[in-house]
Length: 586
Image (cartoon, rainbow, N blue to C red; front, side, top):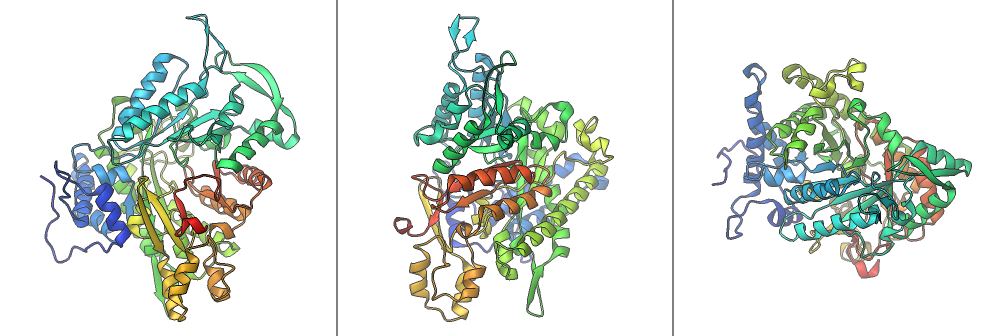
């Protein structure tokens, strides 16, 4: 039996796009044993809202919020807020695994390695993604005392994790995803850097190099640095930092991987250093986590938070101030309603109670405000918007702490040292929102538009095409030749050369490839300033971008305090998730 929402003329009905309905049918709506869909989109949102509201029952009656299920339902049905995909898929259903992000430890023993493979499989089976640091594994050709043999190195074991993902994803509704990280001072770093130059390698992994401040200083000073055997903690040789950095830049330029994580920057912001250093993130890099931690994410569609007064549009900060506390409460409740894949995950997750509230629809907001993405004004809007969300989110977590208590690991944490008492060790995160932004019918995360007419590939076999609705509205208002424009904007990633489109419209509808790498990084850095965890953003580059552009982006990201960076040069991979609609003409 599936929970059906109560009949009420006052309950809003979800207004969903055709693409959103396709994705819901393929991935989210509950099905019976014969594979027949047995719930509507409204039923799904009620199922999730009702289940997450049940968490209130475990707290004292005086602090419970009445009618919370209705409020949660309306947030989702109005497309104002959506949680991460596992929550939508599994809340109120037998699996009840609601978290998206996990980090698992990999220590230098076969037992630890294959425990991690087993745990990875359980997490993927439940709809989560996994991140790993392989930096503790001894390097290739290092001595193995128990067998008097030679170690095969971290890269060889990574292939085992990749193969496990291939097997598990065949039966699921969500493709398994991984992040693989190796410190830059590991002796096998050069092999790791070039691993994905072969398109058939590590197809279920994103890769990132863990960079240190010491390494970045050596790059800037053109010095050598030490490679360290993790088994002995002793240097094995010195190597040119410039050589390693240039190899990293070249690989990222050629294939978009590996990305980079700035480990020292991440750990300077680690709220619980007494629990250990952070060495890894979730698959998209926005959620640094300790070993065995998980995190639940959710995003506010800020395009639904616009008000109009005297024909002028503005961000409705009063509405945001009402939405944010409900979203924080929702995510904290998710932690209590989650059935974790195994006990260690539950123990560590509930020690810190990390949540990640972020946004989607930012590019749409700028368009509604008439502000091009690649301007100083857009950076100022980003600062004002995210600082407001973080401030209200922290206040909401503080209020929850008064009602429910601080997170258990607060004693000894940086928050305690600062006199801060919150329910959650981290509260804000900028996630990519690749799929839930389709459900919300808005632009993804904080990304600029990829194109005016975009084709998305979902689950490797579903292709969704869309023309930006605001562009369509403005083109109609100006009586532009729509049939011709549909063809032309679908053939290109940028419209700046289409002179039949008025200049002011071209200026407003800038795409990712019209934006300089510097501005991309500056935008990420603004959001990072107001994100407790990390920021998922791709520095999209045109085909003509050079390795020097990539190098400059990495250096600037470190300088501005970003926790990581991913670049992608258009056309550098045979298959890509986003493309202009007529791929053969891109």
